[in-house]
Amino acid sequence: MSENVYDSLAETHEDGQWAFGTGFEDVQEEITAPVPDGVDAADLAQYCLMLGDDALICAQRLSEWVANAPELEEEVALANTALDLLGQARVLLARAAHLGAGADEDALAFQRAESEFRNVALAEIGDDLDFARAIARLLLFSTWRLALLEQLVTSRDPVLAAVAGKGVKEVAYHRDHAAQWTVRLGDGTDVSHTRMQAALDAAWPYVDELFRTSEVEARLPGVAADPAETRGAVDAVLDQVLAAATLTRPSRPGAGTIGGRGGRQGVHTEALGHVLAEMQSLARQHPGAAW
Amino acid sequence: MVSARSVAAAVVDPEMPMLTLDDLGVLRDVRAAGDAVTVTITPTYSGCPALEAIRDDLRAALTEAGYRSVEVRTALSPPWSTDWISDAGRAKLAEHGIAPPGRIGPRAAGPIPLTLGRPPARVACPRCGSTATEELSRFGPTACTALHRCTACREPFEHVKEI
Image (cartoon, rainbow over all chains, first blue to last red; front, side, top):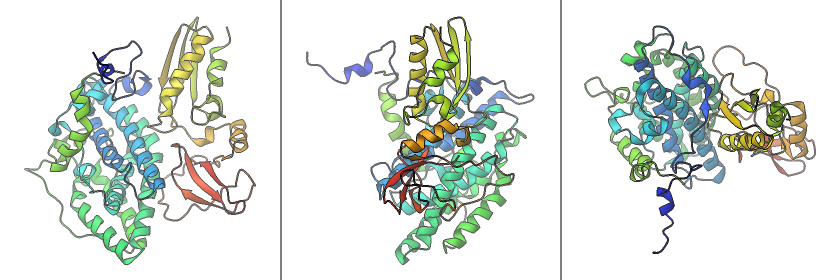
């Protein structure tokens, strides 16, 4: 019988690593921290999924640029940004799993269905490898996420506080990167200006959702960040960037909800299914495979 | 047996092997009880891919030193800062052509300001010492570096960016 190189995927070794992860056997100190007094563990798990899924799905979208970016430096930049977000997602999903939302972070990432994801639509929308659209999405996402993380630094939950304390530095860098590109393209040539404005217009309908407080967030005062309270900070930063970029603040209406439900309740745009198909298909075809 | 702390401290960073974990400031805690040891490290960046290699290297070094049970834990809080890179570490980075990070100190209260322009502080070229340098790319070959160029000696170099 001829040897099939893929056979090794199905073998198990004592020191084997799961083919789709990195062997994830480390003990992350914070994850097992007790649930703060008066907090419902299921709510906290859902909240970790929200922030974790935002980061995971946005990272997946960013990593589509690997081998597609306009220049090598930018490819490295987008991949590094994705990696930071993936690191944040991992801790948050591990915490959610520890609180009972799933077996572990891999199961949550690779085995959940679309309607079980809790990310906002902005994280999942595609960019058709249009660089301006990738930058517009990153600008809006990182400006908002930074505002959330800045609130979460003082969360009563030690895991959220730890992720936020680490994440603010990373996401501030992502935001600056996206903002600098927005200015460069917006205040660039006629073509780059037009395309940057169009990119911003295309992403704008997904901004409203960012500031909508979900039932879960409302039940976690002092633990979760209230997204409604980030609006002022986000607007101030966007005004600064758009002015420098000679871009116009879009006036397109928000995408709205389906019966009051959006990403935080598991109602997604068509885009998420495509993201998950790419992200999950291999892991689902070879469950538990090690090498 | 050599102290677990000194064994762990001497393990080098896989991406910047001129630095030990001690130089880098990622070694949080080492506790040995008999031949069992628990090491706590902190990642430089949330998704730092070198963490897995560091964990394996710690395990190998401590096993080699005679510790039979080695547990490596990671802790995010307090978050790592480049201010934790030791003076010896900074000197070694410069010797190897990598511009060390400047000191940033504790972050000021209030919202993190947006940086739209080029960074004001000029990074000194680790080869010729000139401060006539420019940033080429905000993201370098590893998560913690950016790419710069010296306009005096014309050489490109990496800079460990302040975080």
